[in-house]
Length: 548
Image (cartoon, rainbow, N blue to C red; front, side, top):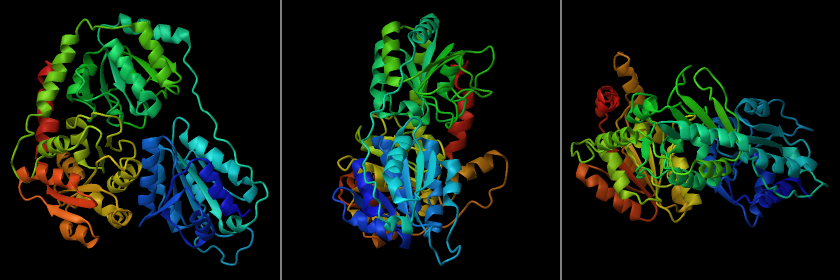
């Protein structure tokens, strides 16, 4: 059997549904084999970076590795940002690229780079397939490694002559069942004793808790124990944002309302802590105690050195811990209630403001009003990410997809497309700043060609707004961050999409509701005013009553 045919059969055997990518000359055997597949669909994209973002989002939502394809050289180097996005964001991803023949080649070093070596620092595994007989075992190993905690990126290089060679070892490996170890009873007993002895214990939910096998168990744990909780940006949605004992999302590094609760707490139980995210607090010697509950041990550094580690399956650990704790009432829960009340009032302070261009509090509130609980919002990277993390109550897991790891621009639209492919019956809204949107806006054609029902919201301020805000905050002059934009409505129409520009603040919500109900690709251009950044995120937070 030809190696490329065997490669596709191995991917079929792993349950792969889609391959996202841009094939090239060195992939033609692989492409022909893919053409004959009865179960894997090719999603042809306009850039390899977009393909990697889509595949990574597929992995994030399903827990199964997404797969993307590129040619050699520049095609493979375009995967680098996508690899880092998946690796830092803990999204299972398999990247496949072609390469020049390795046995007989007459083209010297033309387009040849050591991509395997280049990918080593930003993947969990990077390998070249040097013979067809190795392909099925490498595919099985790649899929296993990509999905195993902590999930991440894997790179496989398939040289052109290897793809065309005959393989005589065609055995397909069965997918293995993966179960994580269980924390020891003595550790769980000690953790329960610490929690019951604490006066104001607080649960912090991190990115690692937002996995399919852990989310339900964590919700049950919090319901049974009655403990108050908060989350990091990438842990948002594990607990319903409307829950009366959920204090909010740590969208800022410090000085926000949730930090009032953190400061007062004497014990923090961190579930699924991931050092990639900015920590919501810094530990100090002699300060509050921390219990680390995760699939893997803590990575100790100067500001994170937990006194107790509960290592093993998160779902099993929290189930057994809840049995030991029972229902817990904090002796000083009144303070946590005040934090939540003050934070909720602050968040909704200006969500009816009619000024134009639209301020963040209003457009975030209108998006929440328009989106159903299961509707998925994908965010690009910019200052609006902070506003959504703080002000957008997430009702269900993985319905606010943001990147607080690599925090790359350009991922919002492709991520939304990946989310729509995984959830075709769920409304999906991709939110991008004008800067991030233009980095991968060509994927609008892909979305139209695929017939996706997706809405794209472009927040226009004609600048790299987050950096401009930081520039002003550091006392520097406004310089080097302003740019022009195309007519986004005409731009959308040129791809065959529907485009509309918001002219009045009160028109935004009905326009958004209309677009979410429409078939096909819809783009909304929304002029925004970020003058509230300094007042709300800096000045007002310095005067919080909950710190008094």
